[in-house]
Image 1 (cartoon, one colour):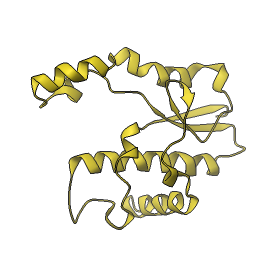
Image 2 (tube, rainbow, N blue to C red):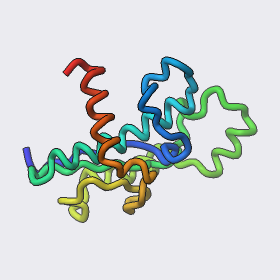
Image 3 (cartoon, rainbow, N blue to C red):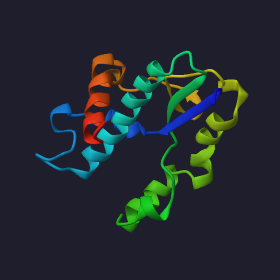
Amino acid sequence: MPPSRIINVSSDIHRYFKINLDDLMFEKKYSSQKAYSSAKFAIILFTYELAHRLDGTGVTVNALHPGHARTKMTMRNIPWIIKKIMNLFSKSPEEAAETSVYFASSPEVEGVSGKYFKKCIPVKSHKMTYDESIQKKVWEISEKLIHI
């Protein structure tokens, strides 16, 4: 029921590998890093497309980069020396959650929709994410994948 907020958690890693619409499911060649980046890229495309579709309804849709969090999941299978370095630049889970909490509760972003945020500040996502034809294509592929 409006006013409502949809908050999609993405990542700045979306900037490093482009989405491949011809092999969205990585059936031809799998790479865990590329698959993760592609998924985060798709979340931003989905966010922008959904924001267009919900325009004027009172429901806002935004994506955000929470920052790298120091958790057991994100640090597993990483050599100890890399962990030491990553710990210098990583956030606690509570710090990483700050942007999500801000968007869920702050009156300052009420009505803001179709944006990508980092540290509670709107920033530009990869230039391809603004291509409305790619947004629609990913939406259509997603519908087919879930049989809608």
